[in-house]
Image (tube, rainbow, N blue to C red; front, side, top):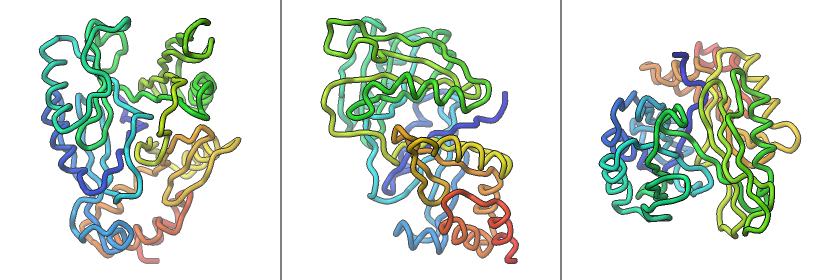
Amino acid sequence: MSPQLIVPCLWFDAAALDAARLYTSLFDNSRLCGNVATGEASSKLTGLDVGTPLTVEFEIAGFRIVGLNGGPMFKLNPSISFFVICETEEEIDRLWEKLAEGGLAMMPLAKQEWSEKYGWVCDRFGVNWQIALGKLSDVGQKITPSFMFVGEQYGRGEEAVNLYTSIFPRSSIDGILRHEAGGTERAGSVKHAQFALQGEKFMIMENAYSHAFNFNEAFSLMIHVESQADVDYYWSKLVADGGQESQCGWLKDKFGVSWQVVPRVLHTMISDPDRAKADRVTAAFMQMKKFDIAELERAYQGA
């Protein structure tokens, strides 16, 4: 299996490690993969003590996620959630109990037209989960990021599916279910869409109700790439036609979804036990928008 190209990144104030420990305790085939410590440069930006975890990488059910202790600036919300397939009632009841503890039940566990048992919960860390009883073979992935297009983005879900599948290799559209006329939703809007990017599954749905949230930096998608050509390609494609460049390899696409385009070598650099090297690289990339690998390497070598 090829390395996961697109890795969700969850923004926490200072709870990334606690969240990762909870999630890895709930799913089989889960583990903590390591963390990157806060250095002098990142401490000034986040307010974290030097040496405390800045990022925490973990896997749940074999699906890789990064937790970032970025401070209080951004808050997680329901605009992007994790859709989880459970194949037994025992599993769904156990997950629900643990995730709802200290959290908020957005939709209590109940029978729905798409599942014999389904619920939506915001856990105590602010992460949103949709948990459904079903067959893993129906999706092919136990945990799937799910976008909800609301507000000014409502009606653009299919456009997003078409854009994303045009950018990433090994992409496909599994299916798009549209709302019919006569209901509360606009006819033709996306009721549910499922698609794959680099073989990884994603979902999109649209909701016309008034919501006090939309996409923000608290849930971003990290694209791990090998070369500067890859950095340039994904950056240009995702900021095109109304997207926005941000700092430190972050951008927003034209729908407001946040992405990070990150060269894989960066992790090696900022994880170096030689903190002087790691701090030089951190200080260098904090001055960048799109990452420049050659400049990062010069900072790493002290050139």
